Image (cartoon, rainbow, N blue to C red; front, side, top):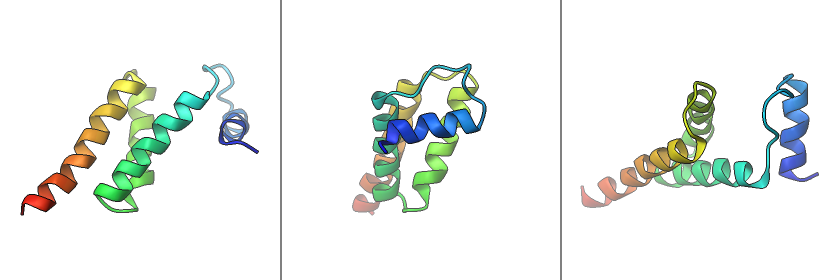
Length: 84
């Protein structure tokens, strides 16, 4: 099973079928953000950050813009730690 197939299965289970389907770009966006949060903040930040992205998108935020903002925020944590 691919991650896109998994996401579609989860979407159906949560009765989110009226929304746009999940595609590879959606999966990649979430995984990239999770990677940045896990590597730059802490591993547990990955699911938390992606969850918060989902809330923001659910409230109308653009997925690409919100993910980019959160990735920059996470990556800045590494930059700040290196300067300290």
